[in-house]
Amino acid sequence: MKIAFFPGCMVDMIYPEIGIAAVNVLERLGCDLVLPDEQVCCGQGLLNSGYRDYNIPVAKMVIDAYDRPEYDLFVSLTGSCMNAIINDYPIVFEKEPAYLERTKKLAERSYEFTDFIVNYLGKTDLGASFHDTVTFHKSCHVTRLLGIKEPPLKLLEAVEGLEYIEMVHADRCCGFGGTFSFKQPEISGEIVYEKCQTIIDTGANVVVGADVPCLMNIKGGLERMRSDGRLDRDIRVMHIAQILDARE
Image (cartoon, rainbow, N blue to C red; front, side, top):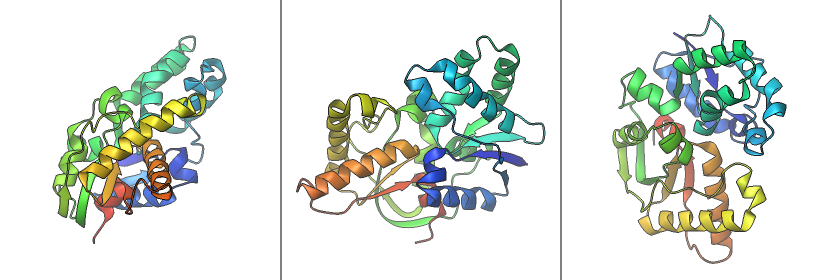
């Protein structure tokens, strides 16, 4: 099975270690992964800012890169990017019927990383071991917009040595919201501090998520709280792919 893999810009440019962990996990599961040379940003930032028409050439490059007969499935490591492609591109291509049809076909064989492992491959125990206390942030895009709720938790439950602690309001927004955090920094900052406090209150040493932008925002919030004295310990921020790749 040949899979076209979409890591997302933040993985590609800022957190390559997350992409490497995800590739390790999927290859252990027997997947043949391809990262198309032509793959680019999904253009979510343009869409969030209302520049739909400017996103058309970007969206076309993504569809051209991933909608190919030699790829059996499309797997995205970042839920917000996948949501943009399968749910926002149909609006972008309202006047582009050929690309609209190709987007719909791509959506039919598209999976978010954890959903692919649990619901397509039928796997939960990947042989991972991680001996620490962990809480999980249920991101807006993965949980609500894509409707993927159970797969990440099933995967974490099967990790040897992992003690899972549910945080209060686990599915509340972290405050990033793409360009929202730039347009409304004060509001965004308060939201992420509320999220960080719920993480701190669990007593967990590690916070895990399945959406990279959220993790970047939460990591920044925790570091600021540490520097200004509101947090007196280190809390690791990890993508679920890193947990599933762990043998600690």
